[in-house]
Image 1 (cartoon, helix red, strand yellow):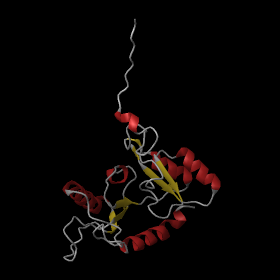
Image 2 (image 1 turned 30 degrees about the horizontal axis):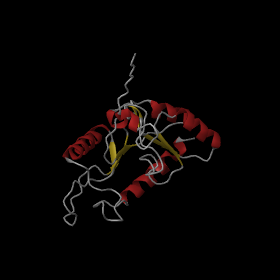
Image 3 (image 1 turned 90 degrees about the vertical axis):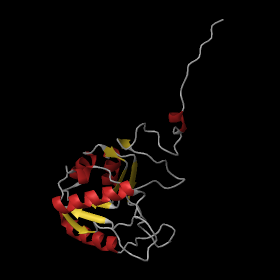
Image 4 (image 1 turned 60 degrees about the horizontal axis):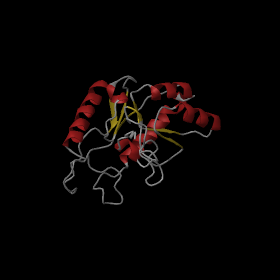
Amino acid sequence: MYEDVIDSFTEKLVKKTEQLVVGPPENRETFVSPLINNDAFHRYQRISQRARADGRILTGGSRVDDTELPDGRYVEPTIVTEIPHEHALACEEHFVPFVTIHPVSGLSEALEKSNDTDYGLCAGFFSEDDSEIDRWFDEIESGMCYVNRSQSATTGALVQAQPFGGWKFSGTTGKFAGGYWYLQQFMREQSRTRVR
């Protein structure tokens, strides 16, 4: 069932990705702004090089060299296939515009593969089947979960509307930024007893 759509999905994803505008964040049309620092840029270079060696890059994988852009670490959003599910490129959080695609046979395999990681920051799912959606929400191991969210389908929280945080190694306390219990993780409890 799910294998029937992988080629069409991948083709559409590559086409849309290649239309994304890379540029300075203050420009309204920019979708991919520069990487935050040199460490992120070098990480992007390393994982792109590894993706070329161990998988197949469908688009991206290079620095954007455009003399019209102001100074910055501009990179192409990158889509990779033919990477094994257990490969580090598929299992680690990179925090750069990089994604790997993995076909699945159905919801059970999708949940199993999604949860088979040490991380759990964000997860997104598209479905029109209420029972699938309910099952996904019940079984996905992620702090922020979205169904049928077209923009930023698997990243970030809605600012001033949702707390931000993750599960597993993507969050240490379960007390999300902007949530009711967030401030308490920065405080020390103390029990005081005075006997007269």
